[in-house]
Figure 1 (cartoon, rainbow, N blue to C red):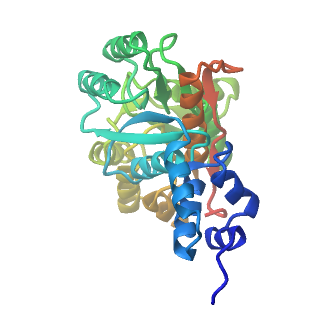
Figure 2 (cartoon, rainbow, N blue to C red):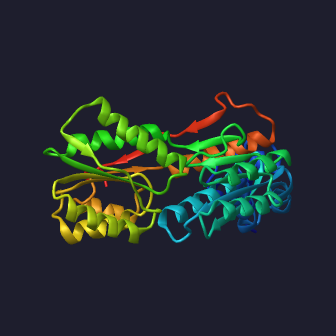
Length: 343
């Protein structure tokens, strides 16, 4: 007669310690929801006699919260990865059963994003969103706050003084980092182009400020041209880059503070040799990795999405529990820097 499965058998099948199985079995805290689920599934697989109890504990012991994430540009690799990390962070949240409500806005128009924020506010306990800094967004944030739904701004800040917290990189420093890289990499005097997505992206404004302030503080033989708006689209970026390259033969560097970098890659590949124009972009995607390997990109500044989403979910849960933050207002994450020799 085969031996009766033990806690040790469950632990081996789940890939955890026997102490973790014991905590799940007895309904103790400090066990991730994902771990509870894995232990419950392992208990069923090995035929453990208390499998039903473990499953019940995994389902019912933790308080439930509904967390909303409103992103945009669903077709882009970066935002797809962002959504995947948000879902994972909710699954692995400690001490709560976090239900992820993820929505991608079809438009960046403030009125449309504000409408979606209000709709999601009816379904979630806390909301995090990417949005421009606009009165419509401010009003929606105020309304949600009045209803007891804290709002977190992501990547680019909005509704300062009303939203619960900003979570993302220090965009002023990001801009200065991009400027330092170009000043270091460019081999001879020339002109530098700067693209932002739009006038109301607060994060882009800060990156532009940091970028220009670096060159003001470090006089070198470079001229930063007037800032161009690309609406974060590859087609506009492609056309604008072609125009820049045709009008400024001495263009030595480019920085894209927002999206649309694929258009710049296309234009440079068509008109310049690798390394002839130094380019700094944001986010490591298949396209930016390929361009870096081909020496069309000098540096990629990447948002640490895994850590961002883990920290964000924790901050959202803390806000719902009334936990005061040690540094309220802004939660900065260090960027991940990629160079050709690191990818």
